Amino acid sequence: MSAKIWRRVFAMGFLSAAAALAQTSTPASLNTKSPVGEIYVAPDRDFLDKAFESCMAQTELAEQAEQNAGSNKVREFALLQMQDGGKLNYELEAMAQKENISPPDGLNAEDRSARDRIANLHGPEFDKAYMADVIVDYQNEIARFKDAELTAHNPEVKAWAKKTLLTLENHLQEARKLATYVNLTEGSPS
Image 1: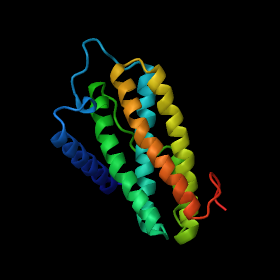
Image 2: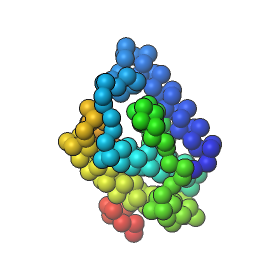
Image 3: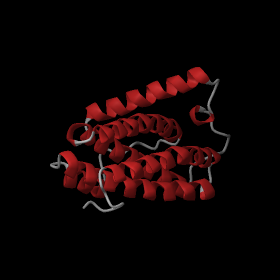
């Protein structure tokens, strides 16, 4: 991911987090003190790594949607993804920093493939392919977050997964509405 995109994601996350702090005293998701003796075991670290990868991929695809989408509604959805993704990334970084977990350097092979597959599409063709990818990605993410909510060892990871599920489920619901709008049969571009 380009430095420009990461700066944009971080800035959006920082601004979202600052707004949240202005409204509440200390949200649990931004609490940088972990309980004594709490460590992230391998499954929790794997979950956080996957969350970083997903956030990065969604942000990069949303950036592409800003440029290639034919529908203003798809562009608006992409902007929402970038804003919420920035906030989630900020929260992720706060948790990951405690355990020296670094964000990935770039997209994994699967996400690069998805990006490259739709990179040269524009207009309605892009909208259909993008929304199909988004729906599948959110379905997979929701499954991972539900699993982490139930099985995470670290209470902070468990709480963050539970809190974030609402955002992911709302995005999936919006993505499904947009899929209908762009005449997509869910999960597969026509």
